[in-house]
Amino acid sequence: MSTEPTAKKPLYEGSTQYRNWRYSPEAAVAVIRNTIEMGEPGSSSNVLFLTPDEELLLVKLYITKISQLCGHFRFPEEVEATAISYLKRFYLKNTVMDWHPKNVMLTALFLATKTTNNPISLETYTSHIPRTVASDVLDLEFLVAQSLGFEFAIWHSHRALWGIWLDLQNVPDRATTLPNTLYDAALNHVRASRLTDAELIYTPSQIALAALSLAAPDLASQWEQSKISPNGNDVLPAALDALRSLITAGSHLPNVDSVREVDRRLKLCKNPEKVAGSKAYLAKKAEEERKADDKRNRKAVETQKAMTDGDPFGNNLGGEKILGLVDYDDDDDDV
Image (cartoon, rainbow, N blue to C red; front, side):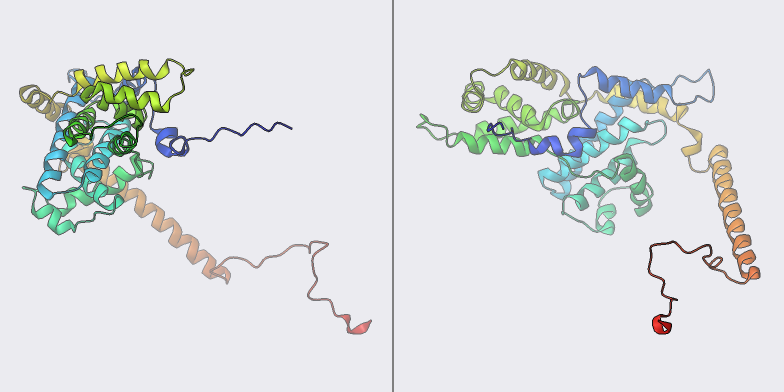
């Protein structure tokens, strides 16, 4: 029998984030978005629908709005990062032509305050956001949760960065104290990565190490050497190079004029069934109500029939007794 110890599986690999929300390579994310777009039926061949890149541009703008709202409400880093992850995951399964990012963003942020144990009352939340009422948040809450697969736990790279930073305090042969400005610079790179697809492709620790290497290359190299064996493969350096390029190139704020143009076109190609008050919306609601009425009527008929037959809870259990079970009707007194 082998005495070699079995390798421990990292906790992250047991998470729903690793199993269900991580894609590799980066092209897989674009394929998912394209699949969503292709599955959307168009109502007219004359309508120019949004492309995946245009949708992403709009979502990116509302990612920045999450950061602004978190600053306004003074929510902790955990709430901001969680809400951004929720928004990204939602639009992996939905399109902005069905659900505008503004209301989805508000719902995702409110949901994140609850799942991270930083709750705020709905009244306080909506009263501090102009032109927002409670229904703007609550109407989409179940849809957002359903699109997330009710998987609310997020493994964040800013927490991984903090772990690396603590490790660096105990690295041998280092006499000087690390300035907090280096950590703050690395944290800013982590925040910038939230504007990219990094968390959908790489692990939190990879993103954290890439962010540290952008802020302090020598420190990142020192930590890497202390943790990785000399015989390790070349996967990590390649991943870090790709991550650094992704964070540097994709972390720029979206151009406001470009977003306005996309938002203007969105009004022309938005799914009419999702626009309250439109003919398509009213027709769909009427059809849903008709189906609900039919279901209630069928249930009422079935209940009435059962009452007429004598037992509203169904017929008595019948059939032959199963051999081998206790026969409680058997009388042993005649033995």
